Image (cartoon, rainbow, N blue to C red; front, side, top):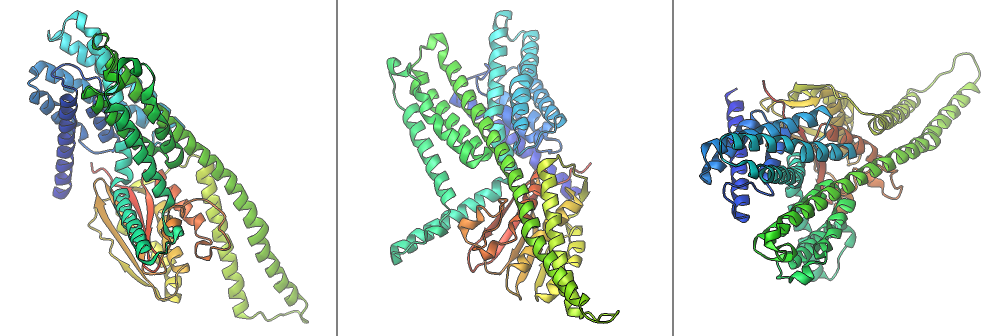
Length: 553
């Protein structure tokens, strides 16, 4: 109990500090005092913190807002009105998103549209209204100032949520792990290139081409955007839409790499545009200051880039799901036409041979029965996996979530695999501690994940390997891992290992595992987590996944 309270205290403190620093940075970069900001990143931080399901997150928002107002020497009435508006706005936004079944992964078009319609456009109206009315009632602003203050707060909070919240939600799901994986991939690329210089021989298949493409995309985005927004531009040239030359790179991120990288690209582009404009450079700064076009154009540009990127990424994700359903049908036909047909034909041949033997009673060798049983079990498991994947692809799956110790999920799985572990001489090292915080999961579904990861490691490695199970807390998540010291997998294959596909007969190492891993990905995604693999040939493999912690009452 004391450890849990201490963790909540630190998390609330972190939210308050990040909120305060974001507010301070925003006010300094835009050279503002107590007046409303045209872009308010703390609003995005507040919504993200509440969507993370962090208990007492609203306390961190209140403390951070009060500290930010105190730092700019705002009157206490203005500080209180601003804090009330920001906190109620974030609470209402998170409540409405939970009501519509919003997923933090934002992998559905309805999630993105609900996020934009409710939290970006509608809810900031409430926060702006509360703050403006309270400020007017306290005599801090006049009647003539109310429309301008209200409009600035509305658009500023909406843009802050639009630009920052999707990025923070992705960070909550798989941020630390993705940074670790990205660093490992960078080191491997560097080693490959260094080896190429020494040996004059480079295996291009070992290079993660998708990572290289992502690096190229972000590099071009930063270069082109910096040239546009950090250059001194004359008004005659600024009248042309030069700022949208960087737009294709944000769309590139959305189409090729999905919503997480689309959100990051939008954030980077917005940060460059805002900082350049604050320095008096770029096309927006060239506009007449007295007309107020600078701020309006900056807000419009930020909104168009972010909204378009999110919608394109969501539509691309929906398209991938439709392709997966079609491929699911192909796999089902493949399983029936090939695998099951082969099994049934073999069984019929055996039965016909037995039928031709004379006498009423026929002796059947035990080894024959065991082979037929194993073959039937293999096909039954494959059909069960196909049906599970089909269920996840075609229907909304309702998870029966409970607060469970992750250590209690393993015993049944290990018992089911005990025969396979013994036959393959596998050493299992289980380091999952019962002292870990509880997780908020569907126990039976997570048992399936462990079963697939363990069985794949056993079946696709030589006998005598060591399997290691670990779990550790990462923020408001638990990171579970299943590692082996087997053959390992090439880095280029790791990027597509969780894709739903019919295994290539020429790639014997990956045959049969894509279906189970795809099902694992669907289960973990439904829990709001992430799953991945770290591996290299000859160095074994480590499959990991993240699960949300339960909220103690």
